[in-house]
Each structure stands twice: as structure tokens, then as C-alpha cells.
Image (cartoon, rainbow, N blue to C red; front, side):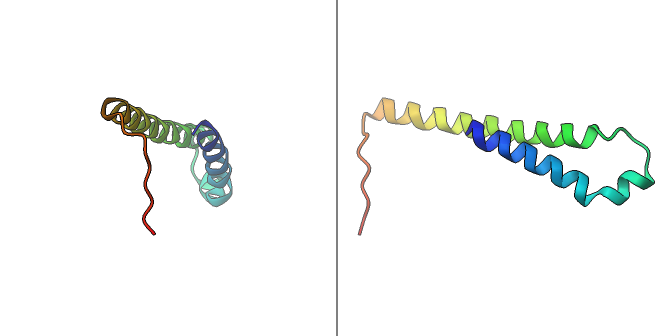
Length: 72
């Protein structure tokens, strides 16, 4: 999950600069704001994924059923 977080943050940050190049030229604001917001959004997503992982681990630890069955 940590690898997905870092890859997603870097990819979306670079896409932000390339896709919004004309906006950066027209409007004056700090260019660091948008990449920081992208990273914060990815961090929130990472936190939700981590929470769901801990819930799943807790569920399987309480139920004691670790068998995974696949239907053919």
C-alpha cells in the first residue's frame, strides 16, 4: 500500500503540472499548493485503505476463519 501511495502521489503531481500549464501562466498563486493538495488527498486515501486492512485483519482474527474458498 505504501508503494501505491508514493507512486500515485508522484504520478498525479507530475500530471498536475502538465495538464494545468496554461492555468499556471494566467493566474498567480503558489505552484506548490496543487501538488501538496494532491499528496494530502492520496494520504487520505492511504489512511482509508489502511483502516480497511486493519478491520479485515481484526475480523479474521476474531472469527478465526482463515480459509479462502474459490468457487469453480
